[in-house]
Amino acid sequence: MTYNQSRLRRANEEPVARDADYVLYWMQAFRRLDHNHALDYALKCARELKKPLVVYEGLRFDYPWASARTHRFVLEGMVANLAAAEALGISYWPFVATPGARGQGLLRALTARACLVVTDDFPCFVVPDQIAALARKSERAVLAVDGNSVVPLSLLGAPVFAAAHLRPRIHKAFADAWRHRSSATPEVPDIARRRVDPPFAVWNGGIDETLAALPIDQSVAPVRVRPGGKPAGRKRLAGFLADKLQGYAEHRGKPASPDDGMASGLSPYLHFGHISIEEIIAGVLTQTYGTTEVTPGAPGKRDGFYGTDPNVNGFLDEAITWRDVGYHWHWTRREDTESLDRALPPWARQTLASHAADGRAHVYSLEQWEAAATHDKLWNAAQIELVRTGTIHNYLRMLWGKKVIEWSRSPDDAYRTLVHLNNKYALDGRDPNSYSGILWCFGLFDRPWPERPVLGTLRYMSSDNTAKKFKVDGYLRYVAGLAAR
Ligand SMILES: Cc1cc2nc3c(=O)[nH]c(=O)nc-3n(C[C@H](O)[C@H](O)[C@H](O)COP(=O)(O)OP(=O)(O)OC[C@H]3O[C@@H](n4cnc5c(N)ncnc54)[C@H](O)[C@@H]3O)c2cc1C
Image (tube, rainbow, N blue to C red; front, top):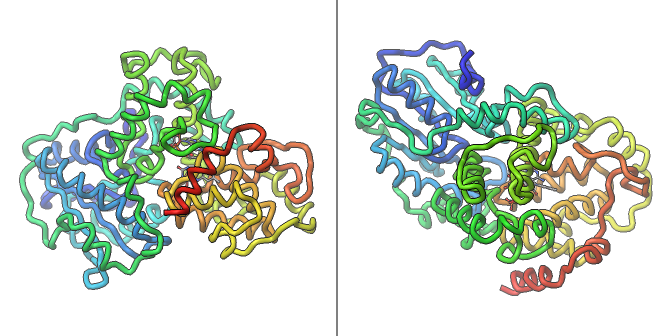
């Protein structure tokens, strides 16, 4: 088996139709035209079959939590892809479903003219079911390509209950995977550039008119200061490299506004595939060491694997190990995220069960949570930040999750609340890391701590302790400013 085949998954047993019109790349998750393993594979097929390439990027309006916020972000990405496709000279067909043109049967019609379909093997949200549905109905080969991480997820083995168990596996496979990363500038053979006329009116970029006409949740407003798309993702990466990376290890955890904090703010761009994790890593290495080559340290340790700089190791451990923990979990146990009972390790299940009858100091309804109407001003601030900006500071996101568990009628209620709020408002929601992050608050990938009411031996966090550990006044002022707008 050659290396890149470990990224490939055949989703059906249908044949490749060598005489058909084109190779179809159905872009669903890695919404970009560079640093993209699925695009590289589709181009390889186009070259071998001597056929043009068609890239189809669709956007439905009926997915769970569809809102003006997420739609605008994706549409801004599509505008960027229109320009990128023009520069590469390939046929790019964006389609935005509306109540009058839902696009039913469109993908199947495009598939019927294709030699084969290449698509993105994203392990979460609606994507796995969409792949399975097309694979079932299609008479063409459907191949899904895992471009989620540096190391293909199929090489990472059985499920783990701790990041410390996945880290050495990633480290051992890293050097080989890094040598086989995707093309920064895809090589497009002339044949792949041959124009194919789309059989429908492709979307042409009128974002405001498109959004206004859609039956999506318009109350979740777009975040104008955080536009979607490749150029915006690259700008954010450049700003992080220039101004924040060198303070990451020491200051990332301190609650602050996105401008003052040291985190990258890249998770929405990663989630929608507007930037590749490989491009981010290459940027970090080049900025710090002047090269993208890595001479890896001893595998398994958080520090020292990616060179001597603690900022580089700290950031890459989050962006590779912790991010992969969520992706790998979904890859191996996707169905288990549907209920706490199936997702949690035995110790966490047992401790929650043994404290199920404990009295709660407060119990809030979904409406109260959503309206940031609790007694706790730091919790309310984190919720306001989420609703207004689509992000929560990383440290406060953990506190935010922990308090919902403590002040809900039951752990199952809390899980439903957190999934709903996170996926409705967060730009990076509906992601493998949405579930792994929320489940971490319930003990997944963690260990038992001293016992307390309600949480049992789950790790405890409180707003008072947070305020003692960090200065939170600046953050509270920032959120008060957001709320006043
Ligand atoms: C309750 C809860 C919910 C969460 N929901 C999401 C979510 O919906 N989507 C999401 O991408 N992440 C989620 N996380 C994980 C983490 O909070 C975010 O990835 C991080 O805050 C994103 O901010 P950043 O891009 O500035 O991170 P940085 O600190 O700049 O890190 C760079 C990248 O590393 C990855 N990363 C960083 N921290 C984590 C982590 N703890 N777990 C997994 N990956 C990490 C992300 O891809 C991130 O973009 C959640 C965590 C918790 C506790």
